Amino acid sequence: MTILPVIPISPDQPDILPSGLMKTRRRPSMPPRHLADMDLAARRSAVASLGEPEFRAKQISTHYFGRLVRDAAEMTDLPAGSRDRLTADLLPTLLTPIREQACDDGATRKTLWRLHDGALVESVLMGYPDRVTACVSSQAGCGMACPFCATGQQGLTRNLSVAEIVDQVVYLAGVAASGAVTGSPPRLSRVVFMGMGEPLANYPRVIEAVRRLTSPAPEGLGLSQRHITVSTVGLVPAMRRLIAEGLSVTLALSLHAPDDDLRDELVPVNQRWKVAEVLDAAFDYAAQTGRRVSIEYALIRDVNDQPWRADLLGRLLKGKLAHVNLIPLNPTPGSKWDASPKPVEREFVRRLQEAGVSTTVRDTRGREIDGACGQLAAGELTDASAGGAAADAEVAQ
Ligand code: SAH
Image (tube, rainbow, N blue to C red; front, side, top):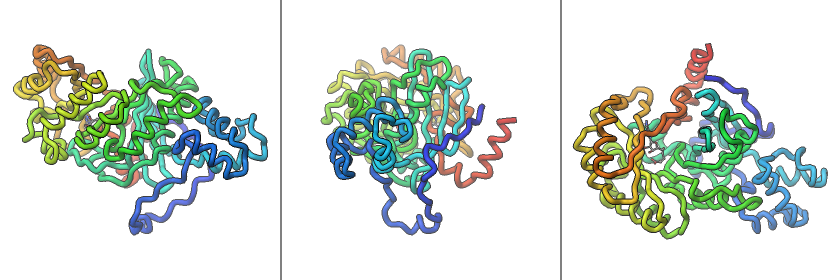
């Protein structure tokens, strides 16, 4: 593992309130408005209200989304006297990287961000020979309480704003463009909402973030909707809303058990929306978009990895537009659970394939830096920052 130097985006980070004060706040503190919160028309009005010509909205958008530049000094097509005012108003610092770590020979990089109110979130950049993927957070913490997930143990701090979501991607696109992701193309092309949080619990902001990421530059980042994956525990009403949205993003459903008894425990929201109902919504999404849904299934030794559960899952998915993505469990600190042994995993795959269900086992990128699926738990890093630093020192030796 390599500990990378922290690159401050801007030194003018607002002071953070003492934690005691933060606790007494009734409403979570949302960040200042940012260019990425607005469509181009709203940016034009924002620029005009600063007394600048409206076409500056397009210029500054081109810097941010097209060139991945956010530093006023680099915006040489803007008059020197306007640059600072425009960037201060439209590009306030939302995310300050406080730790960056790399592993897998530089192909996986995790960034821990501090938000304007002191909340912490993480994102992961993953390079492959043919593509670069950003795994981003949609909430600080998560309220879904899945017992095997590190973020789930933290509880929810707050929703991220549209720009806090988009800015993670734009920042990581800049890292990729710098050639820092070893052995991968320089263009970030995919985004998965598989970082911290439940994206469909922050529905309007996540949808707007998807629109911004997929609008052509300079309005947005110009990614393909099909290259964006939204992963959910299965909030059925929000899934139904997503069907009506008419987007063609890929939907991933974190199933983890084919039967209600076990899923009630592993994914507590199942107590509200059962396996049959959640699968129905997923299949309807697939029918509407023509896109296979991805059924996520973390294999946990002696918990959900029995042959009969593979057979039951096979029966539920047979003939459907679905693909199973098995994830070897990444045990979280103090967890009583472990990954399934490889022969058990192979048998699980075999039975699903025998039932005619397309199945793959996900590679577990970023394990070394706690950057793999379900391991993002920024809250623990702050609560035990001394411990975290000690752990780094051990690895760095
Ligand atoms: N809230 C969304 C996104 C969460 S993270 C969701 O649940 O889909 C993305 C995936 O990682 C989910 O499928 C989640 O269940 C899985 N995951 C969480 N903790 C894990 C762990 N410890 N090991 C393996 N996968 C895990």
